[in-house]
Length: 325
Image 1: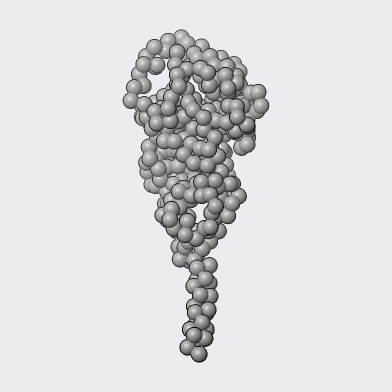
Image 2 (image 1 turned 90 degrees about the vertical axis):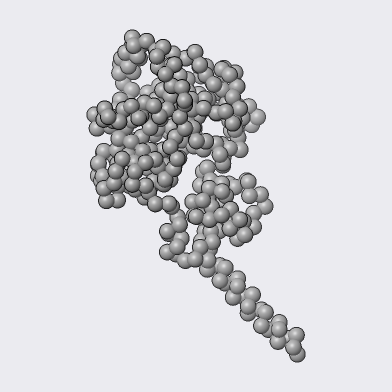
C-alpha cells in the first residue's frame, strides 16, 4: 500500500517538472554563422545551459534551420536577453542580415548601402531609436539601434606606413580617374567622413581592407570582376588590382600566390580560402580581423562579412595567403 502511494505521488511530481521545464524554454532557429557558443552568448547564457535542454547528437554540426531550445524565465526575460543593448558610442556589430544604412534617421530616407550580420561600425551618436554610425569604409549614415550589438574594435596592423609611403601619387590619381570612367560607385558628399574623422578611419585597417569594405552590399555576379558585380575570386582580384597587385581570377590559383599564413597569424588583408564544393578550393575572401572576412557570397548574392570562428565557413576553412608586392 505504501509503495502504491509513493508511485501515485511521484507521477504527478514528474509531470509538474516536465511542464515547468517546457514553460521555461523558447525555440530559436539556427542562422548562418551560428554556433552553440554564439547562440548562448546572444541570449546571455552559458554553453552548458543550452546543452542541458537540447539533446544534440553532435553539438559541433549545427545546420541552418535547426531548432534550438533556449531556457528562459518568461517572455519578458527572453526579450531582454535576445540582444545586448546597442552602445551609445564606440564600436558595434550589425546583428541581423540585410540591414539598411540610410542618409537620415528615418525609414523614408535614401538607402546608402545594405549590410549584413558581423559588419562592424563606429557609433557616433543616438537620436531616438536610431544610431548615427560610420562604416569602416568611411561612409556615415543611420541605422535602427536595435540592429546593433556592442563589440570589440576591429583588429589593426601595427605597421601601416610602408605600403602608403611607397605608393606614387600619380598612380593614385590614375586609379581614381579610371574608376570614375568605368562608372563605379563613389561616395556622395553625405557619405564621406568629415575631415576630423579621416585619420581615425585611415589608421583602422590596411588600404585593401578599407576598399573591400566599401563594396559591402555590391551584387554577386558569376565571372564578375568590376563595377557590375563580383564573384569571389573576381572580388579579391579586383581589390588587389587597385593596389598594383595582379591576382588570377580563380580561387584555387590564388591559393598558390603569396606566402602561406597559419590561422593564428592572420592579419587584415590576408586572403582566406575554403572548400565549399568537394575537395578542391572553391572560395576566397579577405580577412578583416577579429575572426571575420569580407567576400562576394554567391549564396547571399552580394558582398558581405562572415565569420571564421563558427558555422559554415569555420568548417570549410583551408588556409590563408599573405599577398604583397
